[in-house]
Amino acid sequence: MMTRKTVGAVMAGLVLSTALLTGAFARGQDPTMPQGPTVPWTEHIKAMDEALRVGDVARAQVQWRDAYGAALGSRRWEGFADAGDAALRLGRASGSPAAGVPRARELYLSALFRARDAGSLDGVLRVAGSFRSLGDRDVTTQAMRMADRLAAQGSTPSQRAQLALLTVDRPITIPADI
Image (cartoon, rainbow, N blue to C red; front, side):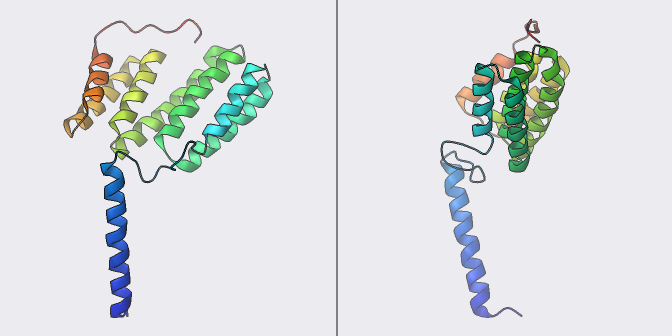
């Protein structure tokens, strides 16, 4: 049985947590996202890009795997999207651009559903753009439907502009290096 003092402490903790979370969301911050200049996967992706810059594809692959692991551990849509982008760069650098596409697509799908579940219109729009750049019209369409639903719940002018830009009916072209 909890004492009156324990119940009071638990209630005070809940009130404080709610206040902190509400304040963070009001400032446009995601309180579950690590604060500061880097997130867990960022340093690995920077190291991967540096390895690619000097032509060390083997080291870049190791760094990409570490970035992927950090993204998995974070469970954040941003990590999955960044790891997908990095997979495409790694594929291009390895001399087989198409090799990165399946992994990137898998990561973008994870990012899309995580962004939707988090209610992140920015995330859904970013991933929709990624699928559009891959030439995946079907998933882009589904992502835009998700974005429309999230936008109906409230969106900023820049988000509405990005949504309008992505929904412009123009042919999708697949980049030559994919």
